[in-house]
Length: 220
Image 1: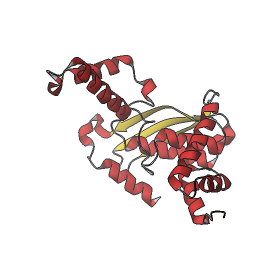
Image 2: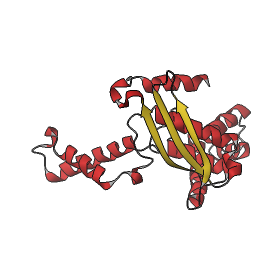
Image 3: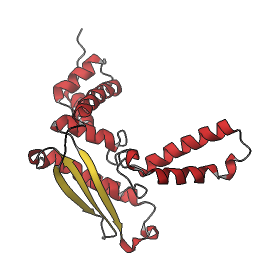
Image 4: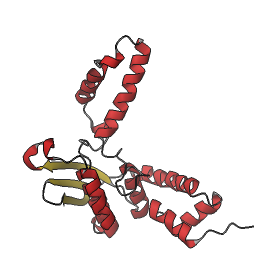
């Protein structure tokens, strides 16, 4: 007996993954209607597709900006693709806007990816962690393990690609880009970004700023 998958279920999976309707239906059927497993299957296929395109040159694209309500915070980001045709696609433009808003809502993010973080920054973080009081008198092997875990967490906090997407906390920015690579058929990369804070100081940021941006996103 063939499992019946509702159109609503297929659409919900498509909205989460950006994959085609038939691909979503087949993934659900192959996983007995289990949305989580179907989503994982589609991500694996999407990631494979993205990996094949990751070495292709991406020099087209656009510069996207975002100014938060009240003009307190502004973002300028360059998102690249392979052709001007894709750069004009509404899907690509929406992706660039979402990334700009993500940066605005991520005050701790300083680099595109962990690979972009300079060695000197990583070394400073290691020294800071190694000097913390709670590690004193612990065995060397345990200390090294704790430091490694903390550094890994800290580097993810600094990396844009490792942030959970503010519109959908089930995926990261890297996942979001890979989904769009699968949909648009081109390599997509975030080349660089800059985040401006009025007055140049973090004291001007409200602790609930990410919540403010999330509220704006829900209204769009």
